[in-house]
Length: 227
Image 1 (cartoon, rainbow, N blue to C red):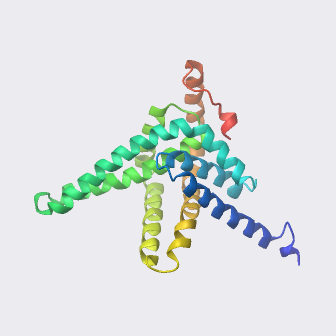
Image 2 (image 1 turned 90 degrees about the horizontal axis):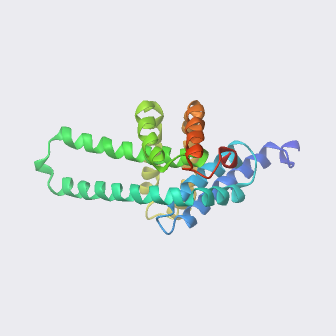
Image 3 (image 1 turned 120 degrees about the vertical axis):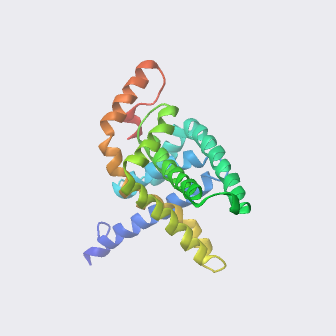
């Protein structure tokens, strides 16, 4: 009977499962204005680590704490990423409709850039959720991290691809809506297993840069407030 009590394994599993689903719902709702996707992603990653990975069970409070903390900076970054994403979309349409005019090597280079772009976004908002830094650093560090940790980046690409495949497979079935609802949360949880080791590895560098930012007045939020 011990597994069914408040501290039992089944209860703990269901508690974690619910937190993942709830964080997913919060991410979707708070991302509806589109430009708030970055702030929502910061909040989802932060609360996922705190409430699911660290068992603190404060998903809602942690989500909105991070959402509010990173709102302005994450929104600026989101606009930048949306502009870059729109450029990729236009280029993709152009390549698709004028296929014969571009060589295979150029096409694969373009596809690799898109994959790096997706990994960079994932790293950027998870990093911002943890450490205080200037917007320039928050936009440039993830590019370097993506290229320096290709194994982890490949894993993130696999997660993106898996989500796309599952949603495509479930399209026009009764599973599509529930999967669409819970997919962001479970992808975020999987991302933490690849991103957390990197965040910890570069923690000293991040804190050093944060200290420099605070000294020059570039940032008002301290690391103690984000963790």
